[in-house]
Image (cartoon, rainbow, N blue to C red):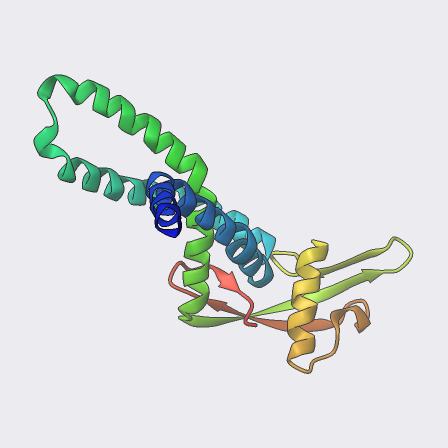
Length: 188
């Protein structure tokens, strides 16, 4: 009975191997990569990176398509080329929309592990209690509540005063790191 059960388990994993890998990748994306990236990067920096990161996803797809074509080149008939190109276009679109966020987050993870330079930014505190306004001002203002919390956690972890204890017109310095992909991130 156990031997038959092992055969069924092997057949199951062989049949659904790609689906299982896909689910594991999506779980890693949602429960590891996305929170990690969200914790280190300001929202504007993520947005700016995503404006040009499509190139990396297209490059990775091109490599995968080349590998698939190279592996199956002997079994391709000339009459099947248009159908193969259509299949690659559909696969490419699915790959782009399905994995673009994963590729972005993986690249931002790599960026955070490859420190090239430190950037010091000075911000002026704008704090109006009556209007319930609090933000950090320089050429690129920070007014997103999540980003303010990230900067505050970073400062407090370094033993510095909380930004929310500062007064209007006080200045603070925030140190960002830049990695391979030239994206600013806060060190943990």
